[in-house]
Image (cartoon, rainbow, N blue to C red; front, top):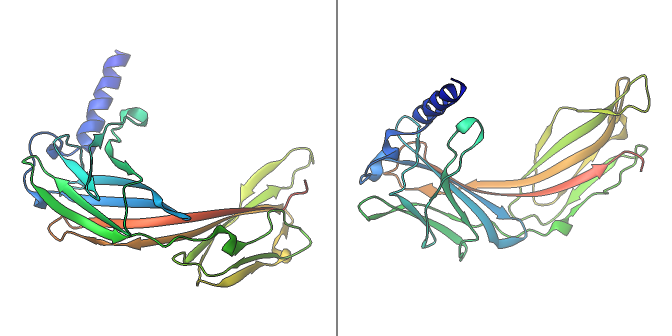
Length: 244
């Protein structure tokens, strides 16, 4: 009985998430929408990860083995993957596609015809050393974060970890404060004053910094509304304020 229930749940999830276009032939690009996401190594333009998800007019996923995607001329087929609770997480995936500053995407439908999906330029390479901050901070000093000559990165997100005060000083219970999101220019600095480290209930234990860039390209207007192509990159830094 238990196995039957699990099987029925599995079927229900497949039916609710997957499009009817996941089986049979698809010869009309107008039936398809595409979400293309590229993650690029900030210091190496040739190091990238690409995922492509297809969807129908009801925003249900299209997972059809008769369709292939071309990334800069290199074909990639649907990669089948089962997620938690029997969910279907199959998608098109590509690594380190040959690149000459532009990503071009095409789709080959069931009849073998190719159509343009979209294109986007690569991000400029960044230098990690252009972002400066002390890995080991000091509770008696302001935290100073500096950056210079960033090419595409335009956003800084700061996650603050706090150590909660407990009756037993040997117990360490951590939590987090509100996230800071700041739009930045290519050169600048951000200071967190030491007065913000302390509260009657907690003490700041550290910061996680994420410097990010994201931009969007152009998709084929014949695709369904909601289709998009994006490229992003990320540089992470950590600052520890706890005594070693």
